[in-house]
Length: 69
Picture 1: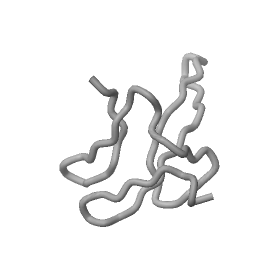
Picture 2: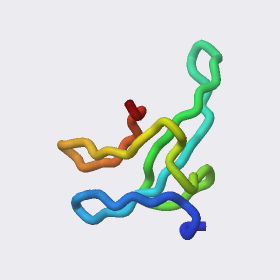
Picture 3: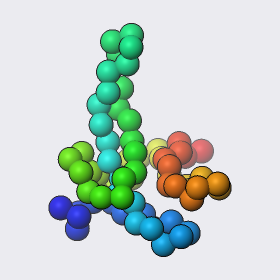
Picture 4: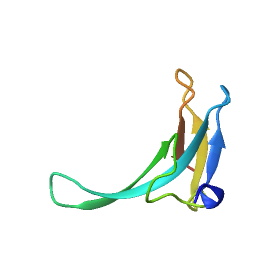
């Protein structure tokens, strides 16, 4: 499963895998979230969704998705 999951290596050399999950908000609305994890879990994606790009936070070097301009 790790072979087809999108992976990102940050500046510190740590590998993260992109995942998605449907969450229910307090108001009952269902929203899709994207997150990176150090291991492959259910919900792993094989590519970055259209309209998004990967960037790192400056302080922790954690990868995050950002909407493309």
